[in-house]
Length: 370
Image (cartoon, rainbow, N blue to C red; front, side, top):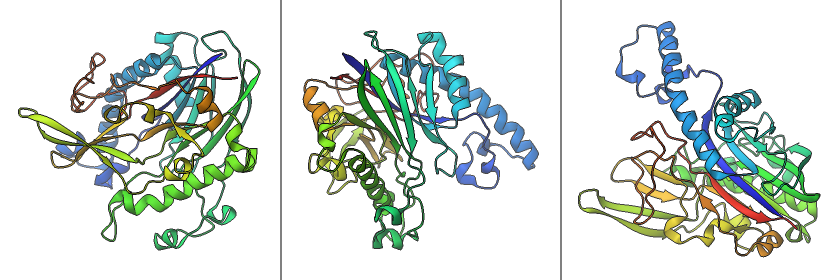
């Protein structure tokens, strides 16, 4: 039987307003920075108007991307809460796919902004096999000390042993597909922000992501047994906020762009991939065609990279050795630079920078569950 599994960082699916930009300019939308605002009350009114005006177009594009994935189970990141997910599914997605994702699961994680991981599921696969929810387990409470993962590098960042490992959560979902067991781990690791002590944001935050990846691996090994984890059917899905490879972009539009693959010396993904503990099925695509995010800080800093992953257990990867994931890029804004031959027709109303479906591209793969 075939299961269509997907992951998608939907970028701030919120059902509340964020007024922190009034006091912290780093959080202020660039639209409002154009205007002189006399006080906080006026700022709140303008921010509400801006957020509402921008949200409708964006969520239509998000829904189009979700519909194009044709997934039976979707792991999602940056979801405010279950109410926001229900409102999105009913108000936007339902118009495109009908009675689709009736099963929705999320928990309150550790993110300071309140964005969580979530899972949406159909009641049956496209083949008509039932998708049965068995249980959900949150691991947001796990500490560095509890798993023995506190390191000098974390201490140098001011992180204490008693603090929680996951910046959001590792949400463990057990299901049965046509009666067959399958386990999903939905994650969203620490972002690459906060350069310090001469290190880039990625380098400075790497110890946290390594700890998160190590904790996910520990959870799986504790669940199935260290010597048997590879023989069970599970997948780790989500936004890892890290890469093993980038596609560097040079040149200019009028002269032509240049694309160069650059391998990284180290990555938090190594925790899963170096010894074959899990398989990154996106690596079955050509090197220039694995990216799920376009990053730029201007013409001098541009690259494409994979931040969004579906990692399969070894037995599941072997049983699906011909499965190659799809990456849905039609919701990308027009500023995204595509390598030759990868250009797509954008969804209607996609803008230069926004609106867009998300800053991330969703990834989906069809799997045989035996």
